[in-house]
Amino acid sequence: MELNAADLAPKYQRILETCEPYLVTYPANHGALDLEPFGLGLDPQRLYDPTTLRSREVIDGLHHLDAFSFGGQEMLMPRWVLFDCGEFPGIVFGFGRPARELGNELRRAYNVIGPSYNDVFVPLSMWVAIRCAEDGAWFGHNLSSSNYVAQTEPLSGLGTITKAYGVRLAKIRKQYGATQWASTSINLHLALGQMKLLGAYTPAHTHVETFSYRIDVDEQQLAAPLRPGWRRPSDGGDRFVDSDNPGSIRALQDEIEQGARLHLHRVEQKPGNCQRLWMKSTH
Image 1 (tube, helix red, strand yellow):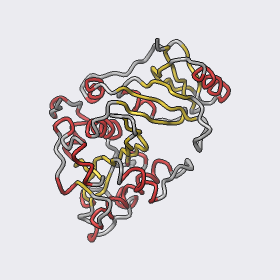
Image 2 (tube, one colour; image 1 turned 90 degrees about the vertical axis):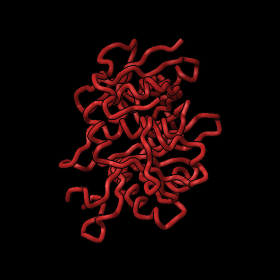
Image 3 (cartoon, helix red, strand yellow; image 1 turned 120 degrees about the horizontal axis):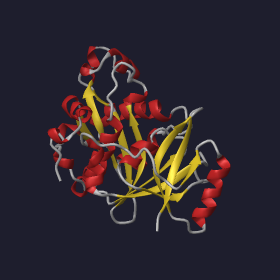
Image 4 (tube, one colour; image 1 turned 120 degrees about the vertical axis):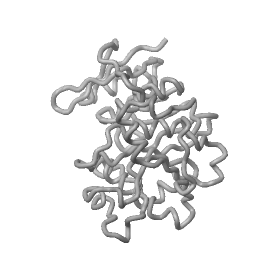
């Protein structure tokens, strides 16, 4: 399946017109990947081997991205974690630009100020995915974009297009992930497929109010949010939990361990930075 520029909503067309896709992974992985996801070719100069010095500056940019997104949540990745878990065995995929094409705000944020940095490629988004032992299954480890820091240069939809093309690049059939009930990114992940709840409360995680999910990837559904006119559900769901109610989250975990089968349907914003997450039973 290919997506032409005319197939995409204007905000996604703008990203493809003004940014370049890139990939960080060990080259032995290339044969298992689709290096033209949805027909989008990657310039060989934007394929980075994390074992080489040529990758150093783009990887510095990845850690700036991680800090923008997760530095305040006690989930900042040490460099060895990103190398051992993502850059070498898995993929880091995203979109970026040379520093000379960035405004002052982003150049300061990425510490690429001055003419000597003009040719440095700056990753403006990244999706880190790690291959699972299960055939066709990958775990989505980290999704970040410069929209967390850029007030003057936002790229609407950058996270969505990054993950959609990254899933296609990795030829994923089952995408596992974990995120917090209060995360503002849930809607993004939810748009790309039905999120089947595997767990609601996770003591193994730094943040116990984390849920685990699985998306069985459907190519048409994966591409649908990128097309003009797509709308996410605004109603429906037969039960909910509120992100600021730890008791209901803990009770939901008990139900899941006892055999309840549920998937997330939509997210409703409530007063006071609270989210109400509506679910449906799966039979």
